[in-house]
Image (cartoon, rainbow over all chains, first blue to last red; front, side):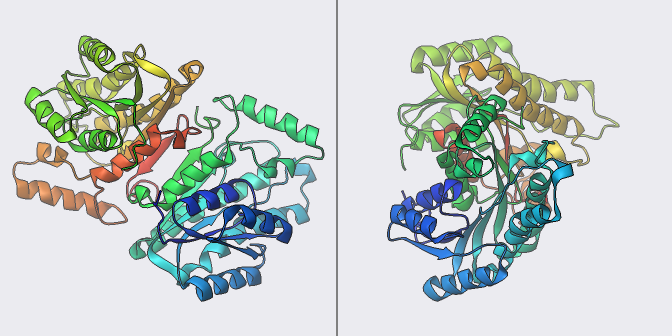
Length: 249
Length: 250
């Protein structure tokens, strides 16, 4: 397969879950992929799975110096960039009375600010006709208790998409949101104290999903591929929701 | 081509021209057996030749329920169970609310809304469990353009059908989603203008309405339709894929 032949991509949060599955799929389609993540051990594990057409760069998207380092590396090694999948994200569920300033800042610094600067700092490197995919979440379409802050950051991401699509259209750059529903990735585990609780949560998410199951990372990677490739050449400023019907029915 | 649809059977209503024909061609290139429907036999025959040896043309009007029954029975008999249904047949009838006639209203509703509804219902006996149904809506389903009141409402209805149909068909695992194109380079402009020059001007004007300053090509819509009927989109249900150069949401 060669939908992304000779393309250079950055996938943030690429060590696991949707990011890793996306990086794999992009490489299968001929791309060279830079993945980022905060933990070197996870990055190394991911790189071992991805093969020679991948490069791992440690960094936290909420740290602007890390983003500068990422793009300086991309520029030095590849010169320019065709695809960004802004996928790194943080989720900590909290009912509103328990939300602290620290939780709020961490959530917004990663998901909103981090996503913003992930794209902004790439702008000088982006080729015309590049494709930017922002990974949102279907939760912003509804009101889910405990997801007040998380959902708000994903609504911010949806807005970034629209405004960027408008700002970058003259360069032929397309910007779209991919809004997943509940997906079987390690981000679920991170939200709960024990593996049993996480398993119960996965069960509950599946029950909330009309399709009767949660998504697999590969299914979201397919959606990211569609948005990143020329298959979606007339698609810009949209939200592609892949959530098994959770918010759509 | 990659043969993504080898051994699959697809139906495209309104498949003689424009978006429908492009989708049918792309599906055939990907290995599918494709049945197309249309009201005009000559146009159907021409389209079948263009699509290739794996194409079947069946004359019929989606606003006539007995035609739909006959169409689907023919497909079932000749091609077997259906994996992909593209509900695309539609008419583009414009006019201001002040003077829109009952006749115009009935025509645009009967084909675009009622026709879409029954195109799905009547297909159920020949659809495979796990099939993918794609309803073609329009970017104007979320806009207020002059002269588009009835047309846009029928397309908003189609977007809604994807949600409720999906809910009804969960036990059969049939996914129903909407594909929502913006202005696309098809013969539809000729139906509203008298000369080729006027049609060209109308198309350019439509293109200029979009942020990307161009109309879409039917091939672009076909690429999205392929994605929607394949397993790549298995986690999408009841949703809408918008392809409109940014017209509606920016």
